[in-house]
Length: 64
Image: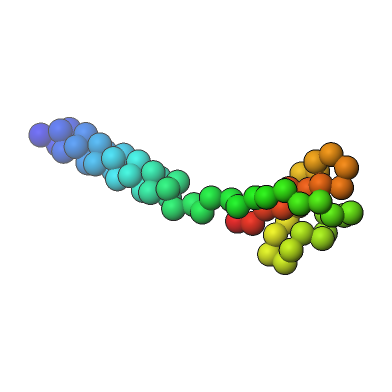
């Protein structure tokens, strides 16, 4: 009887943890990015950061 209770408790804990992990994944905000052409990466608007350089003076400016 104790063995069945331990198995049931273990399964409940695993299911709860799986649900919490899935909820945490869904709550992440998507990253907003757009392409901009500036001479340097630090010219992305305030609150944005340069993620990668495109051709020439173009950057991908992103915000979380």
